[in-house]
Length: 278
Image (cartoon, rainbow, N blue to C red; front, top):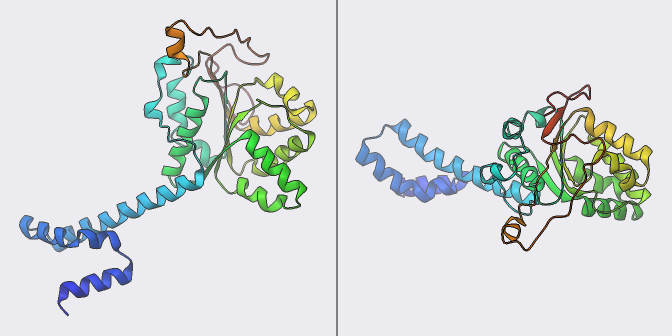
């Protein structure tokens, strides 16, 4: 057997599939460019490592269940001037993941809450953290079904495992007493262990109505806000901007919810105090 054939056989045994695909081209390159043995080997291994990272990210993205790939680089900051871009870029450093801190995006429909939530979740996946995206309605239906089928513990582990759990569109529908209690259990179990990124069109003063129980709402908010960053977004719907420009849509007035800041964003630290209200 020729040496090159032996190399291919050994490469297959080691599972270096992508390195093997470029091996002969890299041998020619090394010969023409007079590369050292170390330079040749480093370049070959880099091909394998990059391919494996891409496969890893694809697998993680499938597990995350993002409805779309939305990056911070694609966000239209000029359309939503109420958002502090520096704060979002700071959150993208992912310190909140290491600290098990929560992020809550509040604002009317279409202002970019989901885009920002997905973008931060994507950053987490690319950094090697587990993330999972789910709408609030689907999450609570899933937990309530598991509760009635006596398999809640097993299903709850799906939402406890990722370092970042993104719960989108919270507050659009009122919740049953069972659903409210189950969400409280989830929040309590993740408290100081994993991060929530939650989007909602409701101000905190309205959460009691959503849960149907102000006591449960207060207990949930107490845990969510203890270590958190709250981003209030005030502006028009990005999805309807073209229709507004054409004069075929006029947005209804949305009064600010009691307890919300007048606009912009603020962070809530471990003490629960506002650190940089704008």
